[in-house]
Structures are given as C-alpha cells and as structure tokens.
Image (cartoon, rainbow, N blue to C red; front, side, top):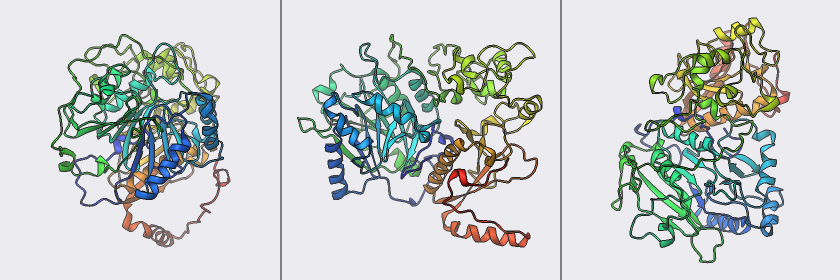
Length: 551
C-alpha cells in the first residue's frame, strides 16, 4: 500500500490473499528482486550510502536496502550526519528500511515522523522518515517487491536502558502471523538467536550465548522464514541452511557486522531470492547438500520468567483488530482472558473452539452498546479524545453515542448491514485485513478468482462521502492490490456503484490478465455507448481534496 517505489502489505494486510507456494508458474512476470542487507548502521550513513552507491553501480541496480540492528548513533558526534539525510540536505539513494528506535536522536526524529499525516493509521510497511527512508516500527508483515517480509523491531529488555525494546504486543502479533498460511521470505531481527550457532564454522563470538535472545529463537522456529537476518555481535556469519519442523523449505541465517567496523567484517550483503509465492513446489522443497537439522529444540520451550515490557501503544496501533494483541495460547498457557475481536464485533468466529481468545457474550453486548473494545479487553484505551466509543460499562438498555452518529435508526441499519463489522450478518470469514478506516474482504459472489472488496469500517453510502483524511489509507490498499496482482501478471480494475439509497459502500477490485489491461477503457466506453451514456474522465492529477464529493 505504498506511495513510493516499493510494495507493502500490511498484516499485513493481505496475507490471506497470498498465492500458495504450490501453485506452479512457468515464468515470472518480473526478475527476482535484488535486495541489499546491512547490519548496525550506528549513524554512519555517509559510509553506508557511499558503499551502497558503489555496489549499485558495479552489480546493481538493487531494489531496496534492509538494515537490522541499531540505526542511530551511540553518541551525539554522529547526529549531524543523520540529520543531513532526514532534513533533506543529503539524499538516500535507494528505498531503505530500518529496525530499532534507539540511539542518540532516535526519539527526536522518529517522534516527528510519527506525527506526519502520511504516517497515520495502521502501517506495517514502514513509516516514512524522509524520502526513501522507512522505519519498521514494532513488528509486522508486508510485501516488498513480492517478498513477504516479517520483522521484530527492537531489542530485549535489559532492565537498564529501556529505549527501543520490543513489547509483548509486538511478539504476540508475530506469533499470530506465524499461524497464517504462506511462507515468509525474510525475517528481520536485531538480537541474535540463542541456539542457531551450532556448526563447526561458527565464530566463537557468535557461539557465545551472551547477548542472544531465546525469544527470537522461538519466533524463528515458529515463523520458519526462508531467510533470517540479524545482527551478530559485530561479525558476518552465514550459517548452513537448516530444515524446519513440519515445513518443506529450509532457512538460511545471515548475521551482519556493523557499518565501518574496525575489523573489516562484512556489513553489507546482497541476495536475490525469488518470492516463495512465485516458486514451484519442487523449488520450495530443494535442500542444498550442506543442509542441517533445525538448531531449535521445539520440544523444550524456553521459560521466560521476565515479562516483555508493555510500552504504550500509539493511536495508530490496531493489532487488537486482528486478534493479535497478545501472545497466543501455547501448551496450555493462559491467554489472560483476552477477547476475540471477531466474536465480540460480529457474534461469530470461524475458529470456533480452536480460537485462543475469549468469546464473551456480555462483552459483546457492551460492544454493541458502543463501549470501546480496548476498554473491554485491556481495561483502558490509549486513543484519548480520538476514540469514538464509551470508556465505562453501559447499563442494560443504554448505549454510548459515537460522536453523535449513532442514532436509533442508524444503529438498526448497521446491525442489519452485511458490511458493518458490528453486524451479526457480516461474513467475517471473508475478511482479509482490517485497517483504521477501511477493511479488505473477499467477495461473497466473486466474478473472478481473487475478486476483493475495499469497504469503509464506518457505515456510509459511498467512498466519496468518507472524510478526506481516510483517502491515504484507501490509496495504500489499492496500491497493495496493484502490486500483489502485478506479481501474478495481472492488472486491477476498481469500480464502485453509487446510486440513491446506496447501502454500505464497497469498492470492487477485479483482477484481469495484464495482456488485456490496455483494452479496458475502450470496452467500458463501447458498453456505455450501447447503454446510452458516456463516462467522464477525471484528471488523474487532481489532488484528493479537489475530487468530486458526495454528501
């Protein structure tokens, strides 16, 4: 869902629509993406980008740069160098993504980036800090040139410096993502793993368990990525491929050194993997001769006596919408009574008895009275005045107004509407992704395979009546679909029917063969001529606030 030369997805967002890896494809629409990987930057952006430009000139072009570890400097000495790029005096040469929100200047620059209008809402594909520079915040999943990328941004709590640590919600979201179908191509973390260095060529500094994170080891074992990229204590380390429990593909672990390290260890590495969604099943199953068994002992889960620190959620954090706010229940562990959002909002859950979250009728009744879900689930809501719902339990027969929008007739309409998430009639099993203002769902009666709908979360007659500040999220969804279908050699036709007494708005997205895309406009015009009307073409350069609006 991007406005720049890259592909997003949100949790992430379109994971359920990803083509299964077993689908054979004779040829790829495009060449495999070319990705550069980098270790701790430590604010040395001039050194890094000089090297990137050199590599790009000699063996490029490359599509993106992924940086793991500490991006910002250790001292104020390197702050001017970082400021030059973020404030526009120097240019970032290629789309660059980084993890970690710690180091000198991190709070200052990232807080400012978080407040930009373009970074509002639920985003897992990176917050734009400056042109071509994106911060991967918390944890998430997105698509990058067809590659499925999952990340944990942050480090383990040490009890001393609590800046830049990952939270319980960050980990819980990844555990939920691990249960989704499809293969993860890249997994980005900062900490090294605690038991992944077990072969004869392991550098002693990597084999040393100090500074490793057992929780990252667990996540790597559950997510089963094709590539796991992390920092490894200042050295470059490429482990032999290893097998994964209950999966056919292998994983390659890559550890990268810090930029400009004095030992001349390799800090930048290039890969060009074919996305798993584009590979034949025989290619997925291939095992190099030096493949080893998995270094992770899944039968001996590490017991975490420490608690992952709960850092305050920002108003744009929406993992609760995905039932992923908490660590999933495993081996009889309690899920702390967290509520299932699908059941609470719709009255049903496709997972039934297998759901790891609580199905509570009383909580659902409170939710239907417009009580805030976060308040019901966590006992508090961090959205503040931006929240449209009540923050105390409503008495029987009473309900909270939603910013004066929930009149009795409107409430009845929403409860009977097929598209309102709070309606008992909603087909929740078709929902692929829920954002801040829109959600994406499979069509109940599809015209073609992978026919999807983009639907406003709020009950409204058409997308042109939605507030202007929601347009950005809609454009990101459309961009994500364009990128997803382009990887399948298809284009997308978006259309919406608007008429008096329109029910809940839904923007249709129909994939068509890329070879026929150039004929779409002509066919539409021919059909309209037969029916006695003409299409009016809007200037594609119109700004969002200059487009026609309907009230």
